[in-house]
Image (cartoon, rainbow, N blue to C red):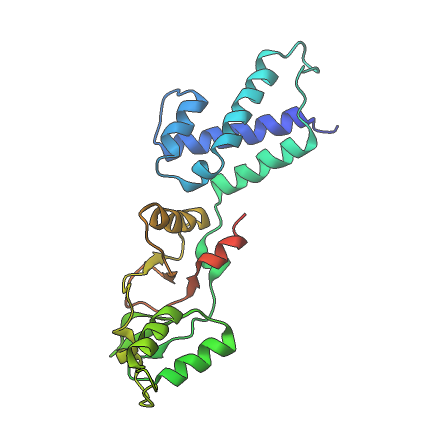
Length: 234
């Protein structure tokens, strides 16, 4: 016996409703739209799919309240709607985390390394920034903008200094030394996206999110997210 689209829809809807109740720690009955309102405050997946979830609530009411018989419903969802709610249900209950999507080998350099080393690394890998460490501790990001500022600071009307600087010296020319955030590996990709959105809303720009096990600054870097990487988030 085949499962009707309306049955698949209701199953996914009920799972979402249950998940939202847990997220807001609601033990009694709360209307679906109220669950959305409360859950979206802290949950980025709910915020990202708020409009869809509200439409699902309306459709669910049409299916349940307008049913005219055991085997007949007046609102039978289309295949694409059913596939959509099932996809969102999976994301609500099992959101993809940054460690899974953006985990990779992170190239780092030492503050005592020379600028040419950074330039070579950035050119070969098409990086726009490189994390640097000093005596085992994270120091900051060397960025393309910072290198440009250093270069401008060394030039005169007729020439440019030929002295090869260390990355520590170049780092002094970084205008925005707090252009990054550390995040834990199990952070959802939608929460990661929110970091960049919040920075823009404040009139600033994040160069990168640095992924470690628990967001500790001196933990091993296990991934990095740049604004360009947001294109990978569906």
